[in-house]
Image 1 (tube, rainbow, N blue to C red):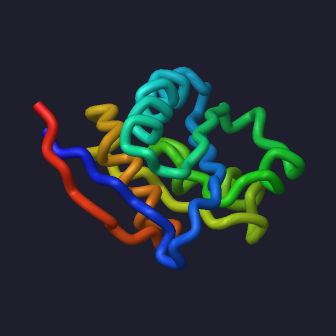
Image 2 (image 1 turned 180 degrees about the vertical axis):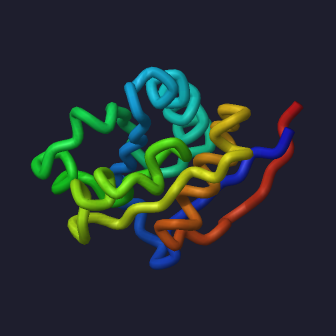
Length: 124
């Protein structure tokens, strides 16, 4: 099993907020615990939170550095209108979301936020 360790490309370790959004909040909550554990284990400066589409507010968005959208809401006009240009958004790829692959999610979030790989270690 590969564990990736990331740092900001500037060398700073600034915590970034990442919000997972899905239709009802159920699948994003399942993903949330694993994503938090993975980021903590790999010492990636990401703080994950999750919510449903209906609970997204301008105040919540203002606190985020990245909003990752579940595939089922990523292309809804309602979601795009709600978020607008307030914060960087990206759809979670189907393969990551479908398998609830938290390691791939952390890596994807790092990529979206322009983090650079610092080291790769192998753990068994």
